[in-house]
Each structure stands twice: as C-alpha cells, then as structure tokens.
Image 1 (tube, rainbow, N blue to C red):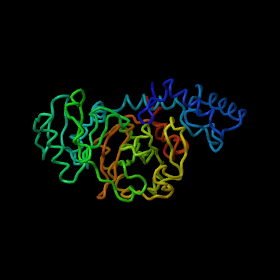
Image 2: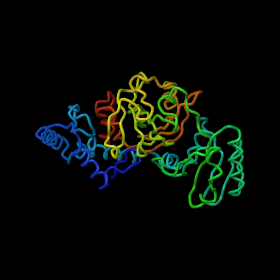
Image 3: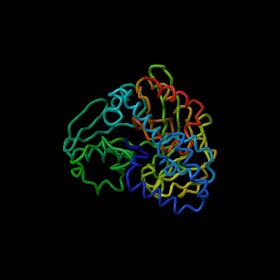
Image 4: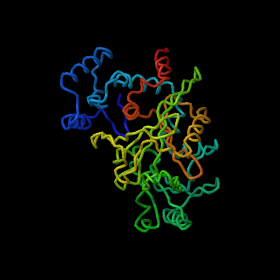
Amino acid sequence: MKIIYGGVDNMNLSNAKQRFRNLIQERKRKPLTTMLYDLWRLFYSDKSLPYHYFLKFLYRPHITAIGNYLSMKQETEIMNKSRQDTPDIIDKVASNKLFFHFYARKSEVPVPSLIGWNLQDDYFKFNHGEISPLSPKQFEEQIKKTITTGMKVFYKPVSGMGGAGCGRITEENIDGLDFSDMIDSDFIFETEVSQHKSINQIYDKSLNTIRFITFYDREQDEFMLLAALMRFGAKSQRVDNISKGGLFVPIHQEKGILKKYGYTHLHYSGDQREFHPDSGFRFKNFKIPFYREARQLIENNISLFPGVLLGWDIGIAPHGPVLLELNSLPGLMGADIGYGGLKSHPQFNLIQNYLTKS
C-alpha cells in the first residue's frame, strides 16, 4: 500500500531520493552510532524495516521519543482496516467534490456557495436549487456576472487532490480565460470563501484551512480527534497545499492555538519554521478564530460521514467555519511529524483496540 502525505506519494523513488539528500545535507543530525542504534531498536520492536526513521526526520537530535512515531507497517495496518470498514458511500462522497457538495448541502452543513460545474463540454448553472444547462459562453457570462457583484470564484477538479488543477477567477484574469479549454476535464465552480481577517495577518493570498483528522469506530461508537493542522500557502501561491510550497502548523487541540513550529514539504527539506516565510508572522500561540465551532461542526456531523479515518478541510470565514472538502483515508505522516508521534496521543488506545478486532 502507498502512504499519502499532503497529496504526494511518499513511497516512490523520487521522494526516497529526496529524503536521502535531506539526510546528507542536514547539518544537525544524530551521531552515526546513535542513528544505527535507533534503527536497530525500531527494527527489533516492529519487525519491519524502519523507513519512517528517515521519512519523519527521526535522525534529528531533538527527537528522542522515536517509539511514539508510526512505522510504515503500522500506518499500512491502520489504512487497510479503515478502508475495509468505511462505507462505500463515504468514499464516493469524499472523492467527488460535486457529490460532496450536494450531500453536505442537503444535510445543512455549511459549505461554499455553488455556482455551477462542467462535465467535459456540458456546463450547468446552479441557482437556488435549480439546475440549468449552459453553453461554455453562457457559463462564462454567468461567472462574469458573479464577479461584478464583488465576489471571487474558485474552481477545482471534481476529482482531484493536492491542489492540482485549482484556480481563482477575478476581474483581473477572467478575460484571459477560455472556458472551452476545460472541456477535457470536470470542474466545480464556487464562490470563494472570504477568510477571517486575523488569519489574513499570517498569509492572505490563499484560504488557509484547518485539516482535522478524525477516527470513528462505529461499532463501539467511539470518536476521537486524532490531529488538527493549519495549512498556509506561501510564495504567492493561491492554494495552501504543502506540495505547492506551503506549510502546516500543528494546533493545540484543546486550546485552539498554533504550536511553535510550522513544517514545509519534504521537497523543501521538511524545514521547521517559527515564522511564516512571507509575512514573518510568529506561529506560536496564535488563537484560531471559531476553532471551537469548527470542532463542533465535525462532532455534530460525524453520523453523516461515518468514515473510520477522515480528513475534514475547514476554512474560517468572518461568520464562522465552512466545510470545504472531505478526505477519506487522509495521510497520517504530517500529523505524526507535527505532534511528535501519534502514538503519544492520550486516546491512541482506541485505534490499538480497533486494530485488534477481527
């Protein structure tokens, strides 16, 4: 099985080489004898090759509790059993953004306003529950009409991940777009969610979302928030995906404040940063607006999305949280790195008990 981290396959050869280069270039790393001892301990305890020692930067001197981190073998076990026990309908809803929008909207979950979509060369307008077919030219006029009201439009592939294929339509760029160019793919068009002004202090060029990762055992009716990470765009990117140059910052789950360090993607050396690289804003103790309400949104709707392991992408608007996307079987690597090992989670025994069930 492959492990997904921030929309990128971590087990391919390219990423393995990048990790090795990171290790060689790392100025601060444990002595060779310590690393060899660590590797032996991990191999002995898990009975598998400890790839995660390099993937999760466990060779860095400040990481001493190496046993708190999930091995690739353990991540695979969690993913496989979660996939097996997650209802098919949840996989379908999570993997299709159009299905997700209608499912959430029907259940009165706050989601962005839907303008329309295209299924290759068939375009559709959505307005107050009414669906109308349009030509590409008519659809373009509809988008322009939306923009003249002061709103911005965000489009994304109906099926996709990692920020690939996403874009933003504004008064400045709409005349350069040709909607007929989109007929080879399927896209969904939504009004862009306005971001809370306090979050704009950190980075204002993208909607910076919270990725909540939840675990839910339906048989035992046991629910836990496994991790919460806030993702930020960087380098003038319009999306907050770390594979596009952004970074993520772990959140103190009870206080709703950012922790000290943010982390970049492995292709950017997996750096720890105390400040946002563009704004210079210090992450530590930043209080996330409407954090409690965002958590409550998940707890109120877990019965609608009863997946075992889910990633909830939530934006914070001036009026409160908005559910943007749902991800079935989200990658755990970023959370494992950010929290110093997910096995240190006070409720991790729920996952251990779940894995031992037949």
